[in-house]
Image 1 (tube, rainbow, N blue to C red):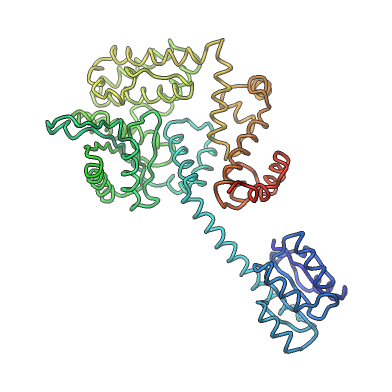
Image 2: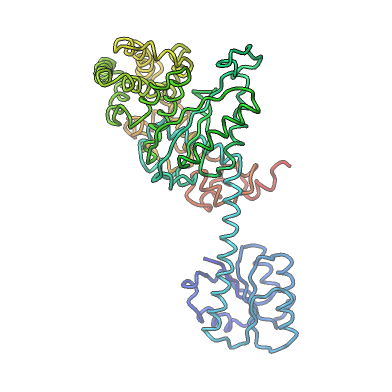
Length: 527
């Protein structure tokens, strides 16, 4: 609703205007009345208004002076003049001070409705333009890019307990429509040119080129706009990952561009693994895994295995992965090992490429669990560091012997009586820190971590030193102050980005915490 201020020295006229049209139907509300220009200016100083309807001949401060003052102080106000004086000077003053219309009393109902409809359309257009400009600024901001990349990492590595979590944030980051699109992942890594060319080893190693490598990749992607998004995964610091909705021709052009630019500007040979096409956000983890798998296997001349392993759908079903994950989290190692060996044996009987793919899928599942449990994998356990290690896992016994120690360490972390509850709270905190912008409530978190809500509430307060709601609010407020300090986003945008239901609730909560309104806080921020 747009707010309207009626200014006329005759109460009967003001009442008549209020009854003249159906204000709510027009998307307007009478938010104030004033008997002259001075009263109107006082009200404008205290409350926001969108439209001012004013008479011209009034005591203390007439309509001409009011129009002049509004033009100077509130240039965004829409001004509408309704007067009983057919005076050419009044008409000229109205035009000079940007009044949108000049009507004579008694004004007809239809005439007034048409004038107000035009004003509402102007306000709608202005609001749309501002929202689009604000949204564009936000989408281009570094903050937005960081949050979007963080979300993509969560999409490909985490199991969302609620589909609503996944879709809410996808829409927030302009990825909602990607849920119905075929998507492909690329994994890009570096190796010295001497690797294949028998040239002397270069002084620089890929580990020293992480930042230049990232910048060149981002520059290569810039030509594709929102159709290709780059992200980094902390589990693979030497790799760059790309998710795209490009068709085969565009994808081939992007690949060639990456190879050409990386070789020219960094002096190293890029190796790119392209995963198979997947559709729906639920399948992104599978697409990501297939690109990692292709990169791992093909990096050392294992192209045939890579092609076979990366083709088609997941070697293990989603239900099987959920069961295996649950076994590790509950510490049911014997059940995990039986299921693990059964799946490995079935894959081994089908083909070597399927067997390899199952190994990688199991490994990536365990790696995600290790990350969530804050359990570091040793270098010998990281297949991405040693892609040739896969060649040595040529039997069920060897594959099981590689994967089981990882699963056991993760399970021990989950079931440790000494650190179990502390680890749980650490995991909850991490989840809140990464998902504060969505609707978080205690029962949802308790269900996600397999606890009864009442017990979880008491446990969280005991371990974190504050209630669940207090912790969530603190995290959101921290992010809100960052946005107020670093961006010019509107309060509505900041409220949405930090998980508050609306700008009004956000403002009241912010003032309660900091003693200042968000606008006051922004004005007092350091230059």
